[in-house]
Image (cartoon, rainbow over all chains, first blue to last red; front, side, top):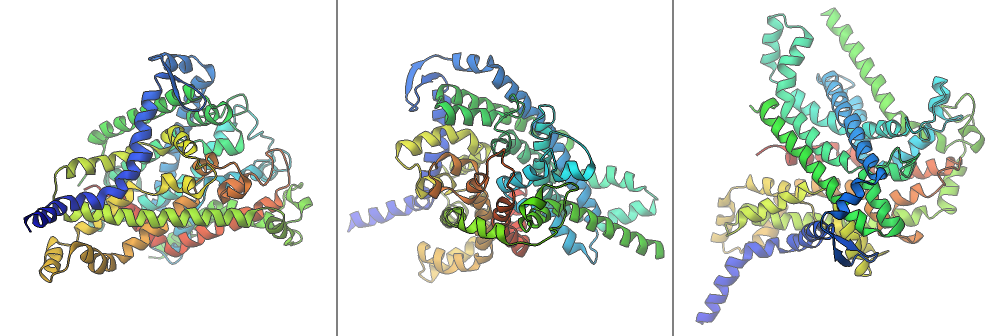
Length: 293
Length: 274
């Protein structure tokens, strides 16, 4: 009788953990374990089956950081992030300002601005591959230009960045639209009474009030764009001459082409550390530039 | 008043123009999918098909494994979304309604998983999956999508809006936690469950890197992977590929347009600062 009561009490203290258990088993298996394993193995020579061979300390890091291809991949990644994150956010913000007031046709253009959100990167890549065809492709044909979009080393990464901007502007738009619409009407009215110019209203009302949303968008997109590899895999496979290879595509190549875990692990960790630092810088900036009400 | 009306119309015209510009790639894919091969790449470029043909769709359906790809995507998106909904409600229930030791730590760990981009983990996850012999299986393809910390957070936030007295009242009536969970909490949370399901379905349906990594047999490819393999990078036969593109994007775009409000509100509540 007493034992039964004890069991019941035990079950009661355990209950909240049991509700969490399935989620944590999966987090353990596919997030925490691989994270620790990747860090751990990045200090070892690893064979092509992923088994640890020999401890080498930071040598793997030294090795890939002296690999010209990897250094190029770091620069490509940073360049890609610098191109896509600010431009898509500014465009999203401008579209939100334009769409701010509800009008008769609002429903049409609001949905249209947001639709790229629902598009997969691979499908979008296929469409732009067609648009980018150099001879007789639509973009070159329509504008009467002759740009080797995906085969000119100077242009290829920009061409891929354009696709990413197209994909992510809608997301920024939707968030900024709700932020812009949350600006109190009386604030705008009193600014109008004082004869504030639209530019002045933008700088001293809209920007500060929407800054928390902007901050959220930038932080999440930074982490996302640092990891980009899908578009590159489909369109250029890192070429021409490594001009579009990103860090994660380097990781993927090491893994899929040669089973080179020894290079893949430290490369993935470098990508993580870079993302982490950038995110932390973002949070530092948050303290200064973001206004919470 | 008059100038205001005119500026209103002008802004609407501008917005509609921009909307068409943004939709252009989708529209163009649709248009090319109805073109004959000789009209796709021509000088000057064709915006609309000079003659409409459905040949590309016939090719896409009969000469490629498109249907099989769609089926695979449907399976993993459905399984992963159901799993995400169930696990998120369970974990959210625990975080919102119970007091227990280590709650703060466990919640912090949950949120920490958002800080680790899944791509960083593919090296290790890939070797786990291949060691378990799960390459080319649905289990392997779903594995990393089965739980989402963002969804857990969302469910917790939603449950926190219910007062604890709701649970206490249920207890008074002799209703246990499990029964409370199924007969009270889940029914009232239906809207948010639908939101989580739909947005995760679109998300998993659109995944590319992981499904590509863990499959190497044609019949196990998902639609997003398969579509990129319908043609070589150098080949210029775009018609059937664009037919495939249109078929692939219709489900997600349609779902998005129909459930836009739900999807957006779900994402936003995950983003709001506590």
